[in-house]
Each structure stands twice: as structure tokens, then as C-alpha cells.
Length: 274
Image (cartoon, rainbow, N blue to C red; front, side):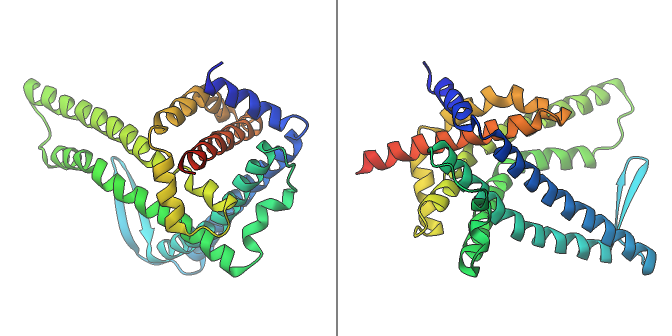
């Protein structure tokens, strides 16, 4: 039996008789996210009605234009910061719950709020997610630079009039799509080195943020392909979530599978170095 199959079977086994709790956690996280979206939209709408102002930025998408006022930008930025500060520790709490669940501990539902109980834990949870985001963004700048250059070249080209120019234009568009897709896959594969940082954070309370990221990078050496293959094998199930109803079953199954992978990998790593 392959490791992927064992992980999937154990994920289903860990959720047996606990699907209701897992689905409840999922709906709570989704509901919190939707509330932030609705509040942002409501505040933007109220601002446009009460104090309309000139657009600070206008984006032209073919025949349609998107006008962004300074007040809208401020509201969007504010809700982005607030939602990040709330959802980051909440998602870490969810991962902590799944870690306990796949370990056979049957953790309480309130585990998802563990990083809201004191300011230090809340700050560290936010700082971890921010540190990971900065690192992933830095890799994105490196990997997507060729795509940006190709897109700039396309924008600078005059509108093609002759057949050869049209063919060259189409070829550049296809090249841009191929390069962007390839770099996207390479970027995602590269950033998998940080995948275990969250699980180290929720299982080893005294570990520093830099240390968690460093150990994650070390532990994922030689295992990024395994994780990538596991995620690809679950991709068909995740694609069904566009129908919404399967989401309540697929998301817990996926989260449990990822927690088991993290548990197996970290146990193997610490056993090896000890």
C-alpha cells in the first residue's frame, strides 16, 4: 500500500463519527470570511452614497472600466488587514484541531480559538503568517518576472495588421500562457518548503517563528514531491467543490490528509535527527 493511500484511508478513519464537528468548523470559517466580504461591500456602498468622490485609479479592461476611489481603497486595505489578523490565527487553530483529531485525541471545538486567548499568541500567529506570506511573495517576484516582461512586450507592441504580425502576436500570447503556467507550478512547488511551519507552530508552542520556518524547509527536503503528488491525487475531489455541496465533505477530508502528512513527515524528521 502506497503512502498516499495510507494517508487517505487514515484521514477518513480519523473523521469517522466526527464529520459533524469538522463540517461545523468549516462552515464557521467560511461564514467568518463571507461576513468580512459583506461588511467590506456594505461600507464601500455606504461611502459611495454618502460621500462620492473622484476615482483615484481607473483600470481599463477592454470595453469595461473599473474606477477605484481613494475611500474604496482605504476601506479595502482596512478590511484586508483586519481579516488577515482574524483569519490567520483562526486557520492555525483549525490546523491544531485537525492535528489532534488525526492523532486520536478528539480535541474540543474551542481549539480553533486557541490563538485568541492572549495577545502574545495572537501576535505570534499573525507574525508567522506574515513571514510566510513575505517569503512566498519574494519567490513569486523571482518566478513571475519572465511573465511580466513578456506581458510588457505585448502591451508595447502595435496592433497587428498583417498575417505574420498576427501569428507573432498569437505566438507571444501562447508563450506567455506557457511561461506563466510553468512558473506558477515551479513557484508552488518551491514554496512547499514552508508547508510544515504551521504545524510546527501549533504543536511546539515554545518554538520561534524563524526556527519553525527553518525546520520546515529542512524537513521538506526530498518530500516536496510526495506532498505535491498527494495534493494532485486529491485535486479531482477538490474540483467538485465548485458545486458547493461536496465542499463540506471534501474540505475536511483534505485537511485531515494534510495533517497526517505533516505528522508523518515531522515524526520522521525528528526521529532522524535525534
